[in-house]
Length: 252
Image 1 (cartoon, helix red, strand yellow):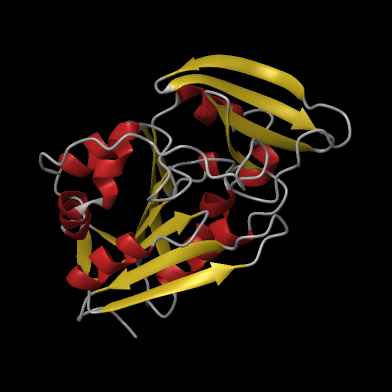
Image 2: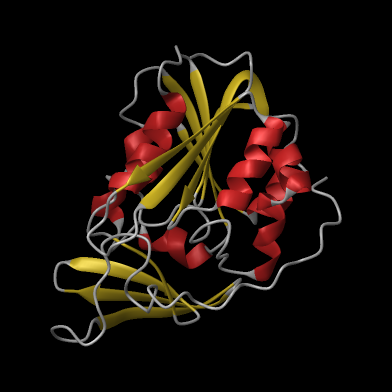
């Protein structure tokens, strides 16, 4: 189990992360025409909105910009770096389907045998059969892919004996800015211990963040033999960061 770590309230949005400036290129409020709402849905974590802005789509949760289809470099790096140097067959877990960049990238990697995607929002999964299908490249139809509509916290607590060579987490705007308060448990000590138990001896953990998270990095260093923070420059200013953690038995 993840443990009894107290839920931490989501911190106030940092000034630089106004609506439309998080998780991808984003758009500054008040520039050009307002995006058009494609669909609203009652989600597990509140209201979800899919918007179209020119030729791109944006996902908004309870008024908080989560991600868009404009770039995806750091989301692709999340899985590519996690699998780097590992020989197949590879089993990958992706926490958070999003706009599909990470899943589509995973299926291009050599030796990938199976990808499990855990996504708690049915609406997000459904949008990949329609508007978001080009960005996930139809990956949900690939026989190597299994999509589980579940909360990642529940999945981690009861994985059914499954273990993975790469765990790639992208369900929040980072360890310091969670979409829902309960997700903070994943980035605390008990959550990291539970995630570690899902890894094979050579397995790696990769975590996406919209900003540097020094306290989270310190927790990783307490538990893993090798930890790396890979910044990814983005047009909005502060780089995205992909945190990589590996144990002593994983490949260099």
